[in-house]
Length: 122
Image 1 (cartoon, helix red, strand yellow):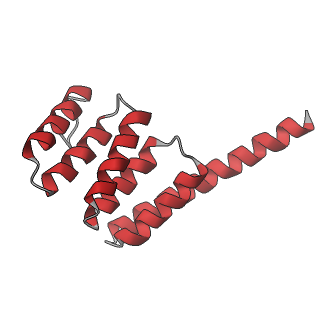
Image 2: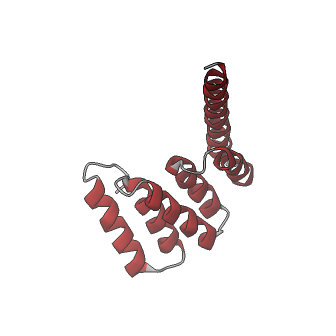
Image 3: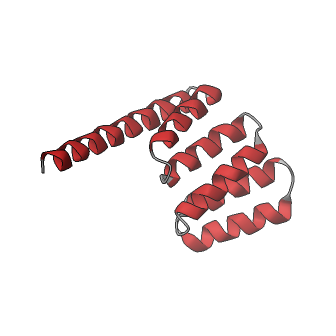
């Protein structure tokens, strides 16, 4: 029982650390420090590999650094983890649009809009 409590405490501390890293990444992103933001998201992903939001955020930061292939890979991972959330599709559309792949971008944006027709991003 005590072992279970320790494990639960460790998990809570880890989730708090993930959230802290995500918030730091968000603050850096807002300041235009995209490389540092991507690094914070990467640290968080190491602690929580199943968090689609982190991949979405890192995708946005990578795209700002013109790392389109990596941005698409993160968008795809976000979609794999959270297929019903429009943000991964939106990130993918952004990346394709950046490299003038209009057909692929439109398809991704269409999928995003289907997931959430009320989204302000779509």
